[in-house]
Amino acid sequence: MDILVSSVVAGVLIGMVLALVALGLTIIFGVMDIVNFAHGEFLMLGMYTGLLTADATGMDPLLGIPVAAVVGYLLGIACYWGFIRFLLRGPMVAQLLGTFGLMLLLRNLALLLFGSEDRGVNAGLLVGKSVAFGMGVIVPATKLAAAALSLVSFAAVWLLMNRTRVGKALTATALNAQAARYMGIPTERMNALAWGIGGATVTVAGALIVNFWSVNPYVGLLFTMIAFTIVALGGFGSVPGALAAGIVVGLLMEIPGIWDFVAYATEWDWMMDVPVTSFKYTFVYLAYFVIMVVRPRGLFGWKH
Amino acid sequence: MEALRAAFDFSDFRPTERWVSRAVAAFLLVFPLLPVSSFATATMIQFLMFSLYGMGWNTIGGYGGQVDLGKAQYVGIGAYTTAVALIRWDVPFWVSMPVGMGFAVLWSFAIGYPLFRLRGHYFAIATIAASLVLKDLFEVWDFVGAARGLEIPAHRFATPDFVRLIFKEDVYYYYVLLAFFFGGVLYMNAFRKSRLGYQLRLIKDNEDMARSLGINVHWAKVKTYAIATAFVSMVGSFHACYIKNIEPEDTMSLDLSILIALMAMLGGAGSLWGPIIGAGILIPLKSYFKEWFGARAGLVGMDLILYALIIMVVSAVEPRGIWGLVERHRARRESA
Image (cartoon, rainbow over all chains, first blue to last red):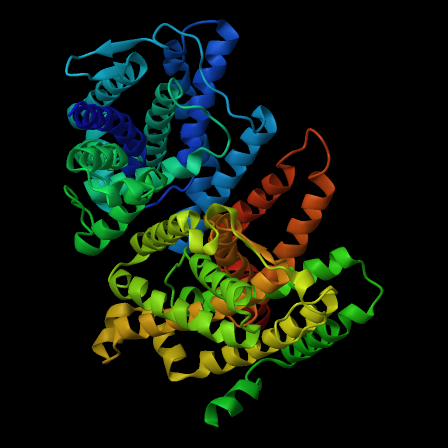
């Protein structure tokens, strides 16, 4: 029983963090219909920012989060003004391949600057500690803190989008860019802002994840695919959808744990022989495939 | 018969284009006779392979406008069919290649049938997801060697072996592939003038209009996807015999899928010459960049950084690719 409960708890916690990873992608897509293949690379840079800030200052890795947010914001804005702006004029093919080029560039710059070996955080306030909840459920403190801070970031973005003038302008741009321009909203700057917010949220997620996940320059692609799945499930452009879908995807990634529980509980030998841990991420890709075929709008999608 | 005549009929191209293409064809025929290094020959083989991949992609991605980023799974199906058949049952290449194409086409129906209801980004990402699922399956499937992959024991066969396509010298591979390449160009020349070719271009421009004219849009896309798949799987089979050592990471990775799309895009999607121009520029750049920068310490990844910059500049400045630049130049000269 405790395997099942701890799998579910772990799934929900990681799901909240993954939802934050996907949040930036869904905002960017909602505002300007562009799919950013470099999203996972932003996350990777966030992970390095958290790690290197901790290394350089000797502070706790969690204090690298504000630094990561600033770096991500500036990076997002710079990418928009320097590159993405020119892609928006072209056809969709050019957008896909252009952001793919951006992904290759960021990945290999990271390789050049930071080297290819795996690096992780091994000292800190929360590292190595864990919280017991009873029923045999023990959760690493880093994951708990990451999930809690993800929720805080989500709340902040939700407030920004729904309770401020800038957020309303952003939503207006997403709904109908031309009409928003007639109303005097500077849509170009709204696009740049979407990239800034998108970059900041994903680098914050990176700084959270680096506390329990080692980083190398190739880590991005996996997260890009996970983020695509979450965005598809939650509905392209939907903020609450991203949170709900993130938790679902987190649970999908814990299928191997749940599988083990069923295998032991029922003592079915064939289940124990399946190398289900190798398929940890396959379930995520499969989920994307099924969602797109069955319900392309996603759970909460308003844009199609 | 009609189709065969169309395949050899290049009369709707301009005289300069025909002369340049004849010169390129002649150069490709005599290339191995020139005093060139084995590295250059290997690069040329890569160029021919990627031109063929690009031509396959160009049917659905270029003429049809459906961005497919999952072509690598079909490379994998072709390569694995040939390798498994050769290693386990000693089946010759010329038998296993069509069988592999058959498997790939069947799989393409299974993938394409549901996915072609989607448009744009949704379709592109779904093809990636499908490709990654297949790769994960191959990585744990013991019958095909799981993540270690397969190795064709070339030393067991007396070379040159034209039946199994096992050679020691790259020259043989070069000429076999060159025959495929010319076949591919002729096929594409017929394809672009076929009924399906015209239907696809209309679907790309205006899908609703195509439907209102009575074209079965979904079926046209699925058929073209199968054609693209057959091309890619054929080269995949060749890849298995040429490289002799295949694993899921090289034959089915996302990077390969993107590279295939990139070749056609950079050269100019939706034109006969586009994939060839794209491969002709990107492949030599990629191998020579790697040769120059790859070995040098402190410059790891420099080759791919330059490569990425080229992609970014092309997609931002001229999304129709290099052929788009040529056409723009022409239009300006004619209006002047």
